Structures are given as structure tokens and as C-alpha cells.
Image (tube, rainbow, N blue to C red; front, top):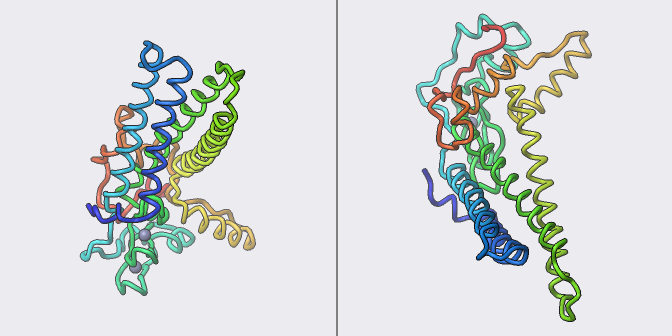
Amino acid sequence: MKWNRFASIPVCGVLMVMGVVYYITIFIFIEDWVGLATSAGTLNAVIFTFMAALSLFSFAVSVLTDPGYVPSSSAPDVEAASVLDPETQKDSSQLRQCEKCARYKPPRAHHCRVCRVCVLRMDHHCLWINNCVGYWNYKAFIVLVFYATAASIYSTVVMMISSIHKDWDFAEVLPFKIFYILSGAMMAGLSITLGTLLGWHIYLITRNMTTIEYHEGTRAAWLAKKSGQIYRHPFNITVYANISSVLGPNMLKWFCPTAVSHLKDGTSFPTSHQS
Ligand SMILES: [Zn+2]
Ligand SMILES: [Zn+2]
């Protein structure tokens, strides 16, 4: 856990956006629509507060959890390497060495130029959490994107309903109209951005791919095609096995960012050849 990761402008920016969205959704949109004192207003405020709290908690977990670094005792799994076929060995269990760390790099680990260290099952370095997204915090990251998307869509819908129900015939509504339009554009933009990111990672999870592996795979598929072969991502087992390798075997814990007891050491992964 590294609390100093919060000392970054993008991380503070995310917290600020969360605070602003929370404030305007509760105290302007819900208040304007049904009023917070009504039972409908209270119910909506409670639901949105719950979503915001889950987003904030997942965000904190993503920031504070170390993504997973290569243990000093890590050594190549010679047995696994001998089982894999030539194209797989090339991408996973080949005896990989990090030039910068001058040590063995397990399958799916990559060197992060920002963190200056090799990260296990590295997905990408995320500026918004000031941390690498890797083996130990990938689940928290996905769950964060899920809750943030849900909260963002919820806020957009509340705002739309609120603006439909609003009586716009007041004399001094122009600044308020501008405020509504700007908020609407911000919330719609945020919902689309987060929704796209969520859709992208759902696609990657169902195929057991990291963002890095997706790009590597595109290149490998192109090279394989040139030589008349077909490239298969080695860690893609079955859709359910792929999903549970990230979110865990218990569906009830899929949306809990701290439920990661299914994770092992992050240096070896089952491949489709072993199943
Ligand atoms: Zn390295
Ligand atoms: Zn990094």
C-alpha cells in the first residue's frame, strides 16, 4: 500500500470529478426533480450514494493495491515451456529476461517504464490511479470502471428526467439552462467514455487477454497469417474460466474489489494446452 500515490494531479482530479458529480446529482438534479425531502428523492439519493461509495472504495483499492512485482526467487518454469508449442513459447514461457531489471520476467509480466519495474500480468499503466494495472489490482480496476459507469449513467438519466419535468418558463433561467446543458454534456461524455472502457475490458476478460497482449496478439496474428498459420492466444481457455480467473470462482464476490483470494503468485497461468 502506497498512500503517496494519492499525491498526483490526475488522482486528485478524479476525486474532484467524483465529488462534483455527487453534489450536482443529489443536491441539484434529484432536488430539482422530486425534492430530497420526498420518499422518491430519499430513495434516489440513497441509491446514488451507495453507487458513489462503491466507486470511491474501488478507486481507493485500485490506487493503494500494488499491481504485483516479480519475486526475486522467480525462475523460469522449464516444465511448462517444454509443453507449449513453438508459437506459444515465443509469447509466454520463453525464457524471458528484462533488460532493465536484469532478471527473469515471468509469462504475462512486462516492464513498466513509469514504475521502472516489471509488473505481473501487466495490463497498462494508468495515469488516473497513478499506478500500474496488474495481477493484484486488475479486478479492483474493472469493478471500479463498472461502478463508475453505472453511477455515471444513473446520474445522466436523473438529470434528463429532471430537465424534462422542469418548468423552464421562469424569467431568470438562462444561467440555469446553460448549467443544465453543460452538466448534461459532461455526464453523457463521461458515461460514453466509461461505458466504452468497460465494454473493452469485458471483451478482454472473456478472452483472458491484457491490453498489452491484445496488441501483441494483433501483431502475432498478422505474422502467423503471413506464414499461413493461425495464431491462438494461449491463455484463452473457456469464457467462464477466463472470467473467473479475473473475478474469482464465486459469482457473489465478482463485484467486491477486495475479494481476490483466488489469485496465486501471478508468475504462471494455465494455458489452453493444459486444459
Ligand atoms: Zn523490468
Ligand atoms: Zn506502471
